[in-house]
Amino acid sequence: RDPLSLGVFAFITVIVIACPCALGLATPMALVAGTGQASRRGLVIRNAEAIQTASGIGIVVMDKTGTITEGQPKVTESSLDQATLEAAASLERHSNHPLAKAISAFCPEGEIEPDSMEETAGEGVRGLFGKTEIFVGRPADPQRYAALLEQGRTVVEVRKDGVAAGYLAIADPLRDDAVEAVARLKEMGIRPVMATGDNELTARAVAKAAGIEEVHAGIRPEEKLSLVRDFQALGGKVLMVGDGMNDAAALKGADVGVAVGSGMDLAIDNADIVIVKGGVSRIADAVSISRQTLSVIRQNLFWAFAYNFLAIPLAMAALLHPVIAESAMAFSSISVILNSMRIRAAEPGEKA
Image (tube, rainbow, N blue to C red; front, side, top):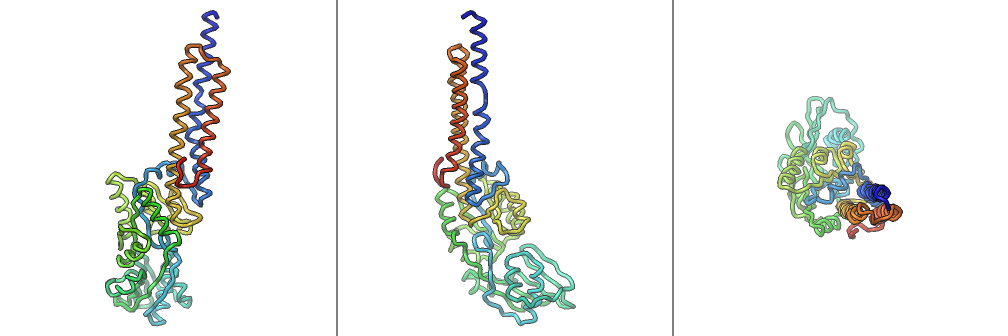
């Protein structure tokens, strides 16, 4: 061949072999397959960054009510007289908290409209009925109810003009998959932590039943966010999961926020991942799918670069025919697509 023909031959081959098709497909194809697998497991991934970040999670902070528990609490015991109970239920009817719904369901007669009311996140709700102030919320002295709290009950105290008028004991059983979820997280090397505004005795009873050792109880919404930031300051990535308005700030501040689909709109709006089917075991699924996806992305990038690394020198030396170069590039793209599809076939927990 004359030098001009040889140069054109080499130029065309290099242009063909250097086409970054496989490189451009490596990450998007894996992410599409990963989010598809997540959706089949009852998870909605709201942004692609979450599925990448979740692979490096070291700590999972979980709310108690509606997350580790079923979120359908029921009043099991009341010491209130009927009039006070109706006033308390009337106040709780205006709140979206799961415990408030349990109280209003326990006393459907509570339809007295308060003259004014104020709800304090993490504390309770107070209202004015004529000249009488009614407060429904966290007990002033939890030790008075130690026997109930140690059984895993949540105690809501009712105070009239600052004086305790009685209490409501509320039970909220563990989710069916709570124990399994905590065990899976531990097997994956992830540290499970409970963070709840509930009393410490109740929180520890529920945490013990679920298999969680580390408990932060009696904390307010802003303290949940501080807890998440404290863990992040130690250098680890934190996943926060919750379902109520008390969790919204912590969900937003965590590296990955997961909301239970039955939760408050505010919590869901601040979450990166939403569990729409299943329970807390989906947290482990999300981390596992993320790890599978990141593993496949690395494999895809390796093969995309490997083809170019091996073939470009041959093309520059005019030792590779353009047809062979085109075939190699097509096979490179196909291999990336097929490798990404393995995520769809893999079960969470398996290596992709």
